[in-house]
Image (tube, rainbow, N blue to C red):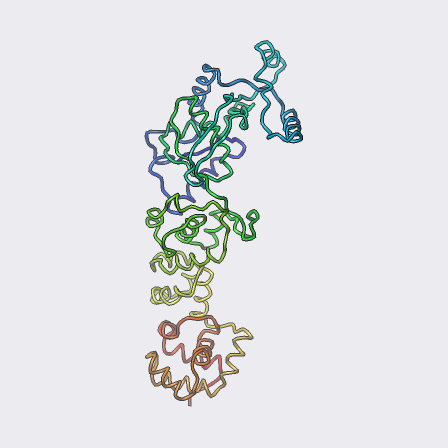
Length: 432
């Protein structure tokens, strides 16, 4: 784990703390890095400036860098002219041609230069991308590039290349928008005589329409998804499949996801965000979660509603029917509240079943109670009802809701007296 905090305006201690917390919540722990330590400390790039200064010095001694005094406006004008001429925009090498007297004159005027790496002419940078295969870049198309800003801050691809080599990084997987940075980093590492990792560039995640992600469609932080009730295993199962194919499209533990990951299984086309798939893996995460974990996840509102003797039964009963803590709150209210709100659709179901049906329900329940199959057989024989015409009215009369808990589990958790009282109260029917 390395903290890349060289951008002073965007790097704050609270942001770093949030990243570490989010990764730990996902179960993505690190063997070396902040709060763990190891042989390659320090792990914040803001604490490694002396290391970078040494490698700037080495490049200077080798004659591979020079100060650049061009202003942003001058650079923009140069790029505009190159595009107009049908050429790829790259630095024209203006300041590389300055002699020492011209450089000193600019320093004397108070100009603060950037530092550029001088790309050798007539070379081809080649590497095999772990995802995209063979890549080839002509040095003339790259142009001399900035490795230190005018304020003295290092450019990220310089410090990342140095740190990757010094920290023994063997593989770098990153977004395809960094593909053009790779030949620059390879040139730097070659000039510094440092080892290069293997690079792979992943497709970016886009919205379902192929456009950029928005807050409305998938552009959410880990913190926001966690607050919404998503379980970390759901996010891992979903994210591991974005742009990557597994041999089996079934629920996997984090260890299984890691074992089945292979760069050869990664696609080159943009990965599209699909909310339905994310919800599918959330349902699977809830399904496979142990009861103790689900109980803690359900939260204090649910805890306050459930009588302690019913805790375990409640979790097992609602587990197949919930995706989020709000769903558990709904069922806690429906199962353990004195008053049950009834929608117009639910009232329609009750009216369609009729009072005669519920008299038979009460009679069958009085005789068989929660012994489910005899109760259902009796009711079918007496009413001729079956399927949803049999189960739905009983569910509505017991919970006030058309949403489904299985009746055997519902009867078990409500108890004999509560079932009878609710059916009588909601339907106004008394047993004969």
